[in-house]
Length: 421
View 1: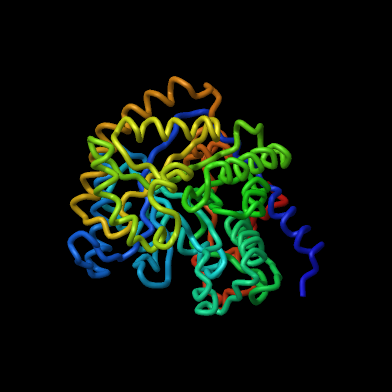
View 2: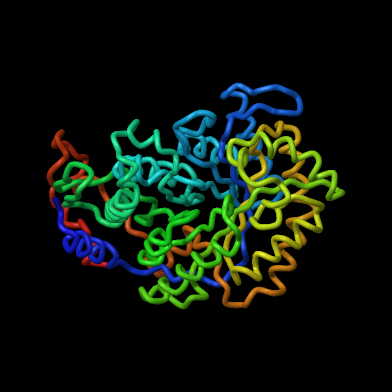
């Protein structure tokens, strides 16, 4: 077993990299999907997995048309969800769009192997030409863990150790590594290397766990308050912890910490119409069913149901809770809401809510409030005005069993480790 002190030493060594100080900029707004395949309780119909998947692809394309900045999808391996392979889906979204950033909400850092994550998201990053980031989370569906040979009782240690390895795989050409939850790596190179040798920006999403806020702060990554289930004040405390620890670890000021917020939304011209139409979907939702009633959740959590002006007011209220933050995500398609209604909701948000929010937030945000780091931001932080380094995959010393490479041995001298950065 690897000792705790060895793990801490590894993590500190892995964090010795050129820090990406987030830059001032505007908030970004996007749409997310948890990908549930749920019975429509109003029309008593259930889409097939394929119909639900292609409908979500249409939603993603619509978000770009309606002026949103990003589209995100969750990862699930159990019914009633379809998104077992988010990178495959997001690659299709990237191919059908030109400016839209693709993201996740979330990527499972516990049941996925870090080597696989490093490879999959580097491929996606190249396909999307940098228009990609990802949100890591533990996942809270207990039966999924043993399906992938994991123990949910080790969920938190798995999350911490797996991200430490993922971070190293993306920041070092050659990795020697030993941990507690997978076989060691000797002279291993993850391929393809990240675009411009700069990995995607990483968020750490949490509903309840302060250790995840600490992890996000330690690495200088983003922290996403996944606004379901819990009262707003609960998320406020997690965000405050993240901001203070972000500053503690030397990544910048509390104000430069990168915070994201999510909320489910349903809109109609009249507030009571929105409540009445949304209620059956709420009552049958796999997320909300069996919990507090709709009115309680609307009052105490970031569940936004009402008229366009009410949605605007509630989102602006998030600023009162969290201060300046970088990303606002809207969940629209959950609970069996049919495709045509979801597309209509995106259109209403894009035409009646989004322009007002951009204007209102621009007026109240501090000029130094940060945006979500872009690929260009991170390339600039790493290289300044120099050309980005283009790493070559022959750097692998030990696990390359084929022994073949299009490069000469002399090219291996470009190998870079974290200590060189």
